[in-house]
Length: 284
Image (cartoon, rainbow, N blue to C red):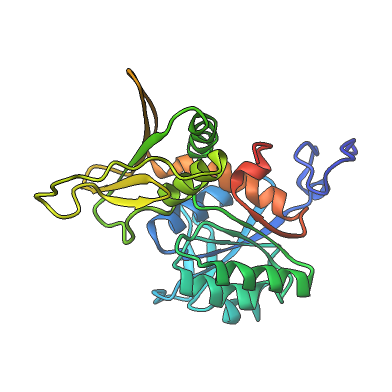
């Protein structure tokens, strides 16, 4: 039976595997907690094939998936791309490693889905330049959970009606950066939505330094790091006689997978750089 889908180069409704275009994926940072979850999850998608993994900590030349499938593992993207071709590179590593991977992957014809936090405006500009030069594409997002994207969207709406706001973000104790990239993205989006800074109440007497947290655009940002947490964020707005709290909680790392698989399927259709999963969901 032939496929009747005309609108997408990646058809999800074909009857057989041979009739479906398979997206070949390389996972960068494959041995990290997120990398392992992504590798296992994408390997189970019927329209995707994980053809390799890259991690600087790799001590073996292969990685065995839960089902027993063995995929090649290398310590650098450049090395793996001499042996395998890929349609998409999914990157959840660190900023410096992401840029090294981008300089190899995009010229080789691979699109990128990047969830790494800590990329600077200069880094994003370089990724955009690489995509323009090599007719590539990338989706860059600070958070790939659907709930977090909706939280930011709702927070932007509320920002027009409140003059005071604070963000509390809570993560596991091994998270390297503080505040989280999602918290910064949220604060920046809120300030942009109201087109002016929030009102920030400074403590007239701060008996413990840093108690009021960090501050950007008038939004106080507080970071909590504790065992037992994964990733959580709440935005609290205050006004005369009322408060509004918007909160998102992640229970396990599988929460990121719907957003990542959406980005992988969409990036093969794109040109240039898309910042934020919200654009792919029609919210941007």
